[in-house]
Image (cartoon, rainbow, N blue to C red; front, side, top):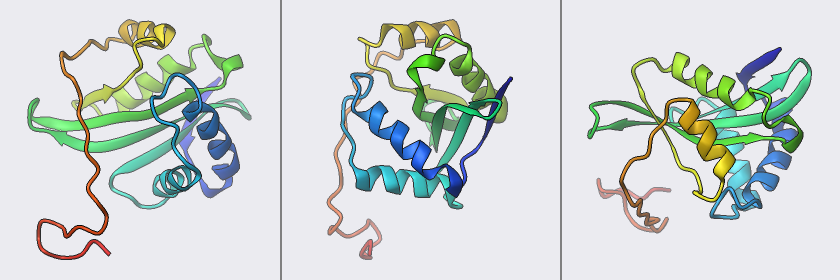
Length: 159
């Protein structure tokens, strides 16, 4: 029986181990770092309004984890939930855990736009997302990290 539940502090080592594997795989374009993994996990188990973390299990056996980031899409005029991470252990893939997690997210955030990124070479994941009702947006996503020492827009230091 598939069970999806919020991460807790007790899940730390299991999640960090899975994150190391996930971010070292071709499914992710960046490698992450121990500092980022620890920060992400902390945000998932804190009262952060931005990030939620969930464990995906089959009974007592952990199958994977997922992390959701919350925002708002002015383009679509509704809340937006980004599936930031969805990792399943290799031996658990193809058993319905991914689809169950996608259905869980859709049910939890009725009416929200659910978005995610996937490496095109990850053909099994792309196929699974299409089977679960996702379609491709015609965008190129760009990024720029603001320097931490810069002032916020309101003139206050971030620290």
